[in-house]
Image (cartoon, rainbow, N blue to C red; front, side, top):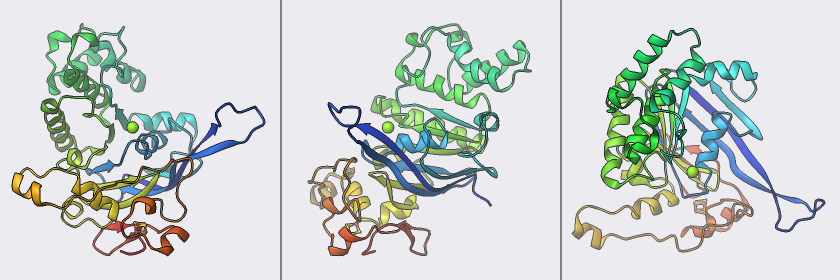
Length: 325
Ligand code: SF4
Ligand code: MG
């Protein structure tokens, strides 16, 4: 089947004023996303992993046109989201929803949860009758595990996990084709994280949703992802099937991330080789030439400083950007 979403050479650059700069001093260019390519298939979950500041959220926001892109295309159901009109974009907005990292902060404190979940429905389906809106809001809250008699309560009356369920209900209520989940469990207790992830997996099956699931650590995306994309300083290092990625990572950076994930067996954990990323993450304002990972890569050679490696398919669906692989 055809991809639902096809992103090509997407670049998001920010202009940053230098500290204490006078109006005429030059600005620095922060290349937050620097030429990203990937596809999302219908019904698939793509995990996106990388350290904070690697461009994960910016990438998500650029796809939704919440931040302007410098270049590239974002093909969605035959339209390039980056070049269509505002009106056309609004028509697509109901097909793609987002849930956020801080569940409480993402809910308006002055609205009841019933009003919060009803809002996107009223925006995108203005002809619905109040009764239908209410019915749909109740159904969707019930599905995410929030009791209908809570509908007139305010966000602060709920726990973090419950707030994230309300955020999920708000995304689901318009029956989207895709939900971008930007670190949806990072702010939650570990015991609650699995519940929210399981809920998302169930909903995805039931509704045939496509998910983009962003996290800063590989262990979180392991169970939910069909494929995983590894980002580093705004560049894609690797995209692989989930099993393949954990069994035989293709990129030295992925190897390092995997070696940092604890193994449940204490014996294996004690004897495993941990590949340390001891050098600091370079400033995204001044990324290394050639391969952006080279200042922390144990395999770096001369060519790595001279040429940027292209993301290349190794023939088994595993795409890797590395000169030596
Ligand atoms: Fe390491 Fe060179 Fe590969 Fe970059 S291109 S990951 S520096 S070996
Ligand atoms: Mg982020």
